[in-house]
Length: 154
Image (cartoon, rainbow, N blue to C red; front, side, top):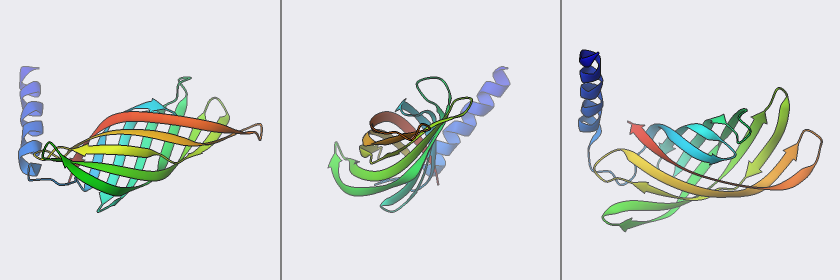
């Protein structure tokens, strides 16, 4: 057990040293956790310059399977405390599944992403107004939000 813990610790530390360059913004594939509404769970992001594909796979607030996917664009940035802080906007679609399909929502998330300069890590927060289309063919306003952390594997 101690040997396994030591091996895992060494692997994680080597990932930080292999990827610990000076980052303005991490590109590549990011994996982490997201907590919020409409989906909380495993967060995935693939970045290329100012554009990113975003996704969250997990559970909604009623403990049923949910998937969120979309795109995000970095509008502007500032160097807060010598590390980059980016303002971003995007469009996402979310599907929630109970034993049957419950609803689909289309949201326009506005967010902030903070990238650590010495490690490929992103902290993010977003607010997402939108429209929810239920399985009963009703359209209602929807408002979501989330915060999370991502580790980038370049």
